[in-house]
Length: 246
View 1 (tube, helix red, strand yellow):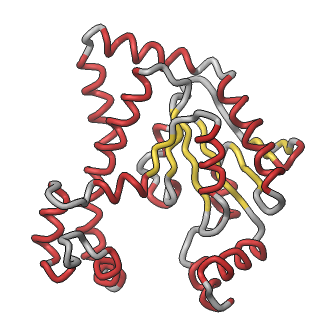
View 2 (tube, rainbow, N blue to C red):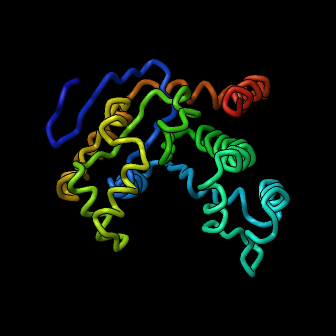
């Protein structure tokens, strides 16, 4: 592992076939800040949380199945799913949690694949998948050649979380403990954005990462996919979809 200036740390990055970049972090580590910085640089961002909310909107297939299995009592007055009530149901039942995941995950992956193909056909060099549980689920890591973790030291993480959500130290520690440790995620990533310092320092690291990815020759693979799609080689895309959704 070779450390560079500005706190940007590069691990075992490989660049033979890159076309997707995974972005993750921990609670209050600053992932949303880094995602916003990349978006301001013109990077296409696919936010898994946003996609997850969209696929369970009223009248969607996932919505209908969730209401069927969990009952109308999980709905708000306007017909939308009460995420807090649903969360309480699955928090105490692994069986219900697995059921919910079996309903939502295929729809989330399908929606993300559509967005990915949209950006590829427009010729972007890379697409960022903003996924909070990237390493916990590991469903997407096989499709990524670059993974980025937004890291901050434990004391800073606790302080930010307590201030942001109005929690006691004990409550904040419990929420942090419920996630995969940031140090563990750091060891799994190709790139680390150190976000314990100032916003300016973080921004410098994001600029360096963006430049590295923009200069990557892996962009050629994106062009190949775009040409294949526009030439009508639907079999390639169907195969990619099957692999992505499996």
